[in-house]
Image (cartoon, rainbow over all chains, first blue to last red; front, side):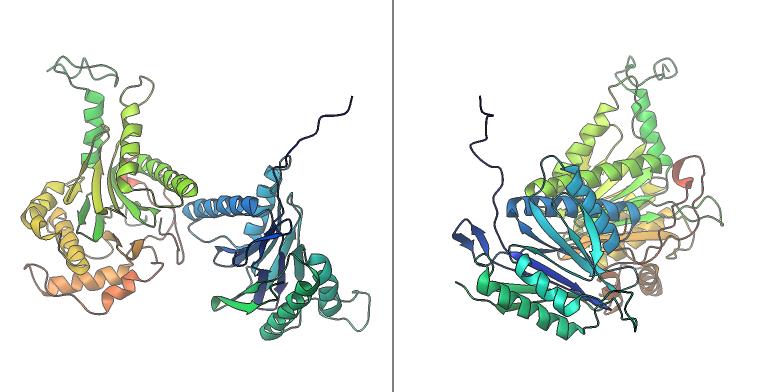
Length: 223
Length: 289
């Protein structure tokens, strides 16, 4: 007797790609705005990026219904934190909260692939990258979503710090300026759009630095 | 006459049909330091007197931000007030989570009143010993409510609770008809005047009072001490007369963004009432709690 199988799935993949790069005093978080289902495009203008706190911005690809639910939970938890502690959550604190929130649903996960970007307590850029159940790590740059397999190797080539055993010693932090990082992100998406059918339409870039938050857009191929 | 026989627990009626425990709870409200609320068509102002147990301690926190559109001023057992504020905050957060819109003030006060009523009908509970002046804004305009330990609530144009509140109420009764169309600045001035009445001759300075405002296009926030002092100086110079024309720049400082809380300093583990010192909330708080 064969095991009974479900005849429907609670999940859907709405595609899309997210990237984040941390700099010395800034952080760039970007995601495309295409939302798909199978071979169809649901909309060309859907934001995957949300500002959770003063210095924390999250971009998530995957199943957007789960992403939205996750965003609402985090927003409520942040409000609660502000009531209790009389201040905004720091990015590292939000990073831990996101991890815990994801693991909370370990046995019916949020189908969300997240990158959290922002400024740490010292004002330096930080990026945290996650899997669907909350495993996370602070990194200098990251990519998630359908185009990540195309973008990550390219970012490794451009940004990955060499082995610490190498001499002379090289800096681990991304040496790029803010403008260079934004340009790099645009290049990443332009390339990913070419080969990944789920990535395209428009690119939303959010830059977080000491002066605050600003958004930028760039058109991508719509095919 | 029969008070002593029928006042042991809240679930005992007196022959005259009164619940003395509830009335005693309302008495606790009258003992707390004064809190005043007034509202116009577009704004609500909450003001309270800062009572300190000693010169060394910081004063009790009596005004709490509940959400961007609602704030509350309390009088009585401030510990009870703190707990109820936490409840109100949670309700607002949960409502927003479900409906993605602000919890209407009228709904919140009903929930609060029902919560208070429960404590008047359980033998193992006691009534909350705090009166709350809930000021907020929603689609139907600006509102001011008073929530009683008895579980009753009323909407007001202006109201005062706590010790020597009658003096403030007398002032408000004279002026309230003009409040609906009052400007934001005049509303705050009237609040300060009413507050001064409760001080019975003591000098009104910004260290003695706390003022909070919520209005159309203005999230609930507590005004910082400098702004309050500037406002006090303006009307004291003008004398005992009714508040004069709007001031120009100073109010803007109080409106914009996070206001530095007036209270700072060590927490005091005192026993009861308004004498408990506030925990030191330092720094520019985005949420002035």
